[in-house]
Image 1 (tube, helix red, strand yellow):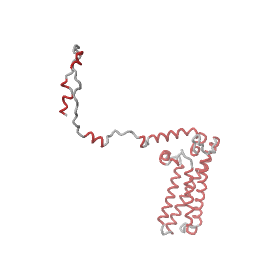
Image 2 (tube, helix red, strand yellow):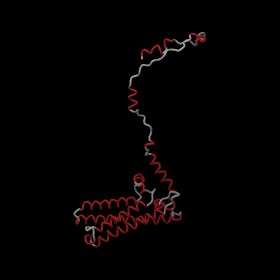
Image 3 (cartoon, helix red, strand yellow):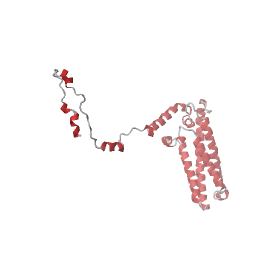
Image 4 (cartoon, helix red, strand yellow):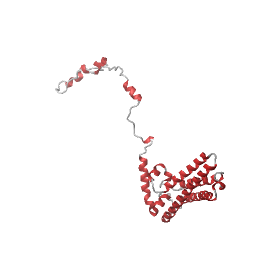
Length: 249
């Protein structure tokens, strides 16, 4: 079910772009919190490598999501990350942000990232970034359903980019995506091969078997008598019949 109304496209342009700015700020705070916990984990924990790797992955994911929020590399996201492209909404982005927030808050139970180890100032940065990114994740999921129209194919990302003229841009995105898909042929759509198979090549290399051609059946010398008077038509010479050369094959 969709709650989209054409009158919401204009306000949706402002609301969704405001949420975009908040998403970027929240993801930047997640990156900062990850690096704070990475440094503290390196100092306190003995098994800092695995904890540090998880913080690095979290920060890289945050950077990737920030790039997807900017109107750059659209063709790359359409081709390789369609759930983060303009043809999709914000559900994937919202779920990813929720997962990042849960991961950030889950690290606060460890000794290396506790309030005593981080200090009150850094601990507030970590816990606030986790809470904010989780809240914005749910807001993105809700906004993806509110500002979309299933009947016309308008997604919330299209509304965020074009506002009230988003329904006019649907055909542009569909033609672009279909033109890219036409260059990726499946196995059933591939062109026929003109290369001969090994079986056919072996058959062609085999020598011909002796051919036995039978001679003329019921030879009637008078069958050509009616053509004998015609100067243009002459009786064929039986010496050139293939049966006379059967022994040569």
